Length: 115
Image (cartoon, rainbow, N blue to C red; front, side, top):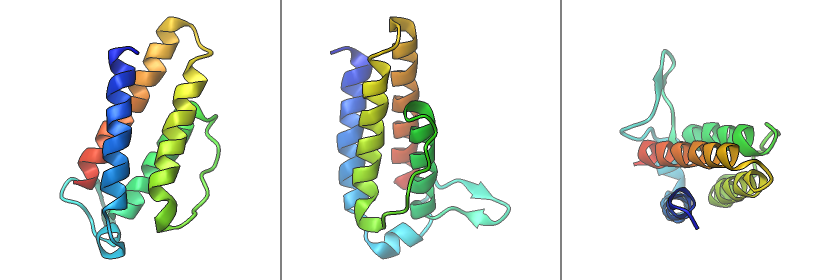
């Protein structure tokens, strides 16, 4: 296991715990590091939905991610990251490392925005 893979595994565990720990009120609120647009700050729920789309874009052929409700958010994050990791295995080494690094960067960004 290389460093990127180990770091990604760590981020998956952190994200799972962080997302499971959010109650519906917290999901509806903007986090202190949430992205801000002209319409206002994104809720944590919106932040997770954007990250799900990004994970799908990176490793799942940009498939549409269904809205399965708040109780499935952590599972969806984990599944999409794992699917991206699995899809990287079929790539040449340089592209594999690039995809894993993209997944890791997106996971770290999500974790920080949910803080």
